Amino acid sequence: MPTDTSPATGSSAPTQEQRNRTVLRVLTVAAFVVILNETIMTNAIPVLMGVLEIDARAAQWLSTGFMLTMAIVIPTTGWLLQRVGRRTAFLLAIGSFTVGTAVCGAAPTFEVLLLGRVVQACGTAIMMPLLMSTVLALVPRRDRGRVMGNVSLAISVAPALGPALSGLVLAVASWRWLFGVVLPIAILVGVLGLRLLSRDDEPRSGALDLVSVVLTVLGFGGVVYGLSQLGGEAHAVLPPLWCLGIGAVALALFTARQVFLLRRGGAPLLDLRVLRHRDYVVSIAIMALSFLALMGAVIVLPIHLQQGLGLSTLQAGLLLMPGALLMGLLGPRVGRLYDRVGARVLVLPGTCVFVAGLAAMAWSTGWAGWPVFLGLHVLVSIALAFVFTPVFTTGLGALSSGLYEHGSALLGTLQQVAAAAGTALVVTVMSTRAASLAAAGAPAHDAQVGGIGTGIAVAAALAFGGVVGAALLPGGRPADDSDDAGEPAA
Figure: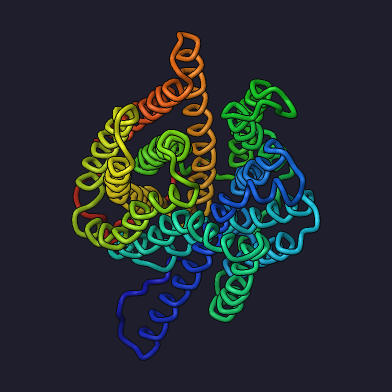
């Protein structure tokens, strides 16, 4: 049962409310640290290629391996959080991340560094669903928008700080300090979390279905790996289309397996009853389309800033910081607005401005300088601040308490798939268009700029699906806890 943090009579109520707030703050800081780690190596890739004597194809696995691990582990977190409870799950998450960080910092070879990144990814995959499900369990419905806004601040600011922080560290120290800076913070957060998280959340019984685990690895792993290879890796271990085909078949079998387990009264690895809630389905569809378009644009925009406009890596990272920081800072304010007015009135204009901003960005690639892209990136970031917090809160809040963990796991998994799909599609479109222009006689620079503009235009077209979904969101302020929907029957 969710713990009500609203004021109540009795001397223990304020103490429990304060304790819940402290727990959420610690988990938010932990999420900030693990998400920061995803982008902190952006500027270190060229350095690692020289120091570890590896080529670009091998270095790419530091990102591909991380994303692939996330896609495989996240679907299992719904079962894990219900089976072991929040405190043990936090220990697994922060422990894996800390061990992985230490391994990366001391890695003597590329193989050891890659292993450390995989271990880090396991901890990151557990931390985000843990944070989301804890918010739903401890915070009443009327306050969830505000709390989710604070969570979105950490989620938005961390990726923005990663490239800039790595650039500053590499300017004065070895690449190993990228992990040396993070390690003591992770240890401190782990100690605080273990002291604050209680053991009063009772784990639920249910054996781990190994067949579902294997299908998860083949399904989500195959799709994400295949999409990532389509996006720019020419030397895949298996042909990308083969991986996508294997992944699609495995996902179909995975879905059938979860339905079979539910009908037999077993414990599914990922409870697909979350898809019976209309507001949840609409919300994750908007999230997936918006995230797909965002990641597609974000992957090609730095290429244009550096190769098209001549900015350095650090300059490009700093140019993208204001928008992401502003999106994070707006999160708590948007969350408070959501608690008063609901989702549709915020998400619908947000998605419209997001599409318009991407379209303007695509149109500007052929003539504009960096100030225009700075302004457009800020505009797009402000628009997304009015999308992500209401969408996350509406979607997860539509579920009954028994499905919180599984809803968070499916949402996190779709984020990884959307990121891979957006990167693959936009980069493929960019490369194809650039090759076509070059074949027609365009100079190399003009061909690349034309390809980037076309890729961002495709991202804008995909983002328009979010506008359609926003019109289907519920209007009015969120319901109270007393109006919580019941859990659909299996």
